[in-house]
Length: 337
Image (cartoon, rainbow, N blue to C red):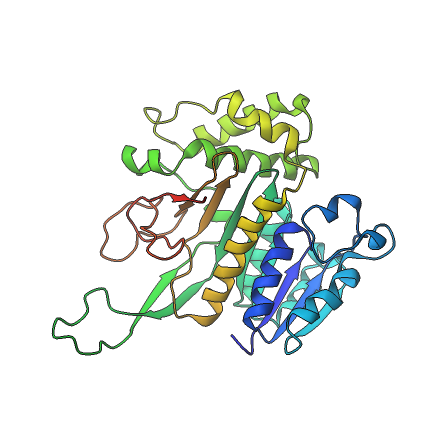
């Protein structure tokens, strides 16, 4: 971890929180790319920005000295060229020198392109985004190995040897096509499909319109998208027949805004999991985290991944979360006070 290079693309509220955590923890090098000027809205969740930066400095230039002050031992570089998102050759060249790439607040198409390039280079990938009070975090860690204490420690009290575990992750493009058909009714209920598909519908809306919904007028389309995705995923109808309009009305009006508390939860989750992936001494999440800020509930959903070894749960079940948001096989929900 101390020698790792992390690339972060787009610097908004979620990325700000994640950067704070990984820089304080002490990675080797951080590269941040963003081409936008600081806007008034950035001051809500962007604690690296100041009033005088608005319309005067680019986000990365304004943030760099504040990021560096968190930990002078971490090398911090910034860039303004986001054309790499549509230039496969340039993106592949950039990714050659990083260990992990994290994109935030991108539409699905752009996130998938970066994920595919990261996979071709054998690099770990995270993406995250906030939609008002809600949001998501996703990871594709390829074939990830980590060490942990054995599940059945020795009974005589002697020190147990650490065991190595291996997990195969799915790319984002495959995870978004995940079928819930084989997920039991009990597991489906715990996974909160209304939350999951409301957030996925917002992300789909952002992809189609190049911006998140921000008006009550977006509600009919958002409802249509959510129910289409729900039906396509073959979610058990006895658990969730449709996504009600009242579950989407707040998202339709506020998804384009950033809320500092929600960004803190999502960015904290993102930063913590990046550190786990780099250190390889604890199991990272597998593989989608959805957060509903209205109810302060989070759920980890195992999408397009095989069940955890020896657990016998169908893909889509989530983990018992002993110390964090780790997905194994038995359903669990994270409640955040």
